[in-house]
Image (cartoon, rainbow, N blue to C red; front, side, top):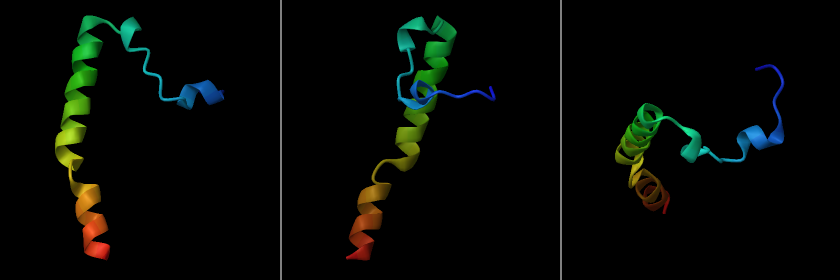
Length: 49
């Protein structure tokens, strides 16, 4: 993992290549992230004003 290329960070998950278990884990983690951080940006922006 020492060698990194720019396409390693292009945001492409290649979701179609994941196994069913990996897809479920990815979706679960994405859902948890959204649930944890939804509305925080708006709240922080309005507090600055």
